[in-house]
Length: 435
Image (cartoon, helix red, strand yellow):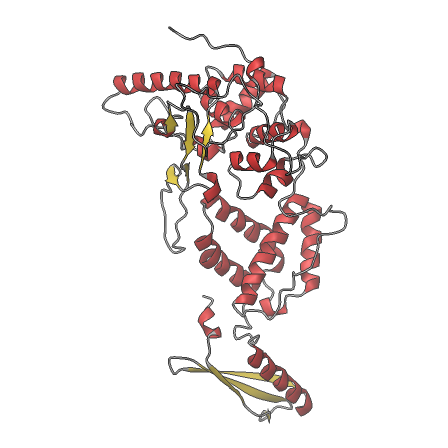
């Protein structure tokens, strides 16, 4: 296994050039000394003339002096990338999904093309050919390959496995349009109109994913955030919802752990600190939560001995939480039966965000609502660049007066509650309330 400690020498010496016995070439030796008193000797050989060896010796001394000398010069790209995934990315990323994405890009799209090459021999031409090959396969994959390769090679430079990053400054082929970090323009064919949202909400009634649809399309929550919602997260007085957790597969930080039955419904921290937020609940969603709570209580009383009472809003009849892919088959059937465009589940969240931006909502407020770490992400990822609202715009007038939580008895929403909702109440039928 790759040992980065070899780079941590505290002293060095480069011996004089000498002629190898029984060979017609020259060599010199590098002596590296470590804190524990041990030393490592490396022989540099194969030089045809003494002058060639002397020049190489001087270069080595310069690298040792400025800290760019590479001790592990036999490391293959595959060995390095596998180490980087397990001992850097695994330790730093927040979720299994992120780690899995990095791992798939490395194992399917980088190692098959560069894996056998020595890391120190990797050059800009190799990187350009990889980018060309992967762009011909998929522009989306090529962009991910570019990101992963740059991040990994910067790690290699920091840990003195290579002297410089050969991917630095290398761009994808000219056929690929360049864009800013985190930039993606929304394809309006993959989002819903207000009228289509109405159809979806009505059609979802009576399906096992009705609440998940409401939380996605009317509040913009991520699917794993939705599955992690509990009734205890609801403030029934102020009608607000606290996003506190997500459900998903836990990433074991120990790369050597063998997991036979991975837990896919673990309570995990949110994607980022900005993902923790308090949102106002539209009246339509609030009433649905109350109805769902009644069903929860009925199921708990009927199944006392086998009910999994963990307070999840989106759960089975036995109270068990939903997995992240539970919605899939129900959602696709729902779209087909309702005659709606075949868009991804995540496109509902994009629809919600884009409608806010195009309805003159402050990008900064929308960013907080979506739980994004930076305002740039909301604007660039979800916004139509021709219709973006400048930062200087004043705070926006209410976009959903009929469904905003009402102030009661002089008590309004807490100041930190995000005041952004989509006005769709006029499109929706009024729920009949049992008095």
